Length: 175
Image 1 (spheres, helix red, strand yellow):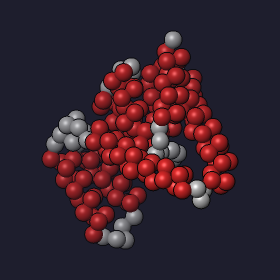
Image 2 (cartoon, one colour):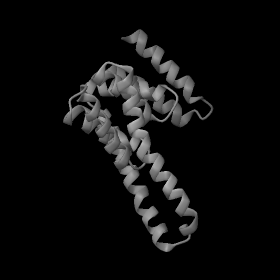
Image 3 (cartoon, one colour):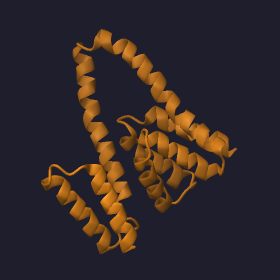
């Protein structure tokens, strides 16, 4: 039963998830934390953090981790990952076939103009969902975040990977 629910949930997420992985996070969070309660909000945040550090699209990595967490088996992770991958693959295959024919059409240009702000809004919603008291509940987290943000903004030659590693090491030693 859980496998069927997992498959249908991630199939729905794959169909409705426009704008890329970060835009899909709010939908994934709603489905797996609030609707099905397979994981907690703090667990979801941890899964997103892990998904960001592993190679591959964040939505697929998140589906893999949630599939495993919800079922406790590798088959759950495989099923969730396949379910979230199938709809975008079919949609993109179909759209690419016709996009080159209609790319200069004014209606297609207009539709693409509407999709961009919606995708930005979905990414913003995902950011707001991840910024809760459990994740940023103390001053140390804000200080690390502020230092990394200011360094990224004002020191142009710093590699983002170095910032991630330094922030991780600082968090490890401070906590």
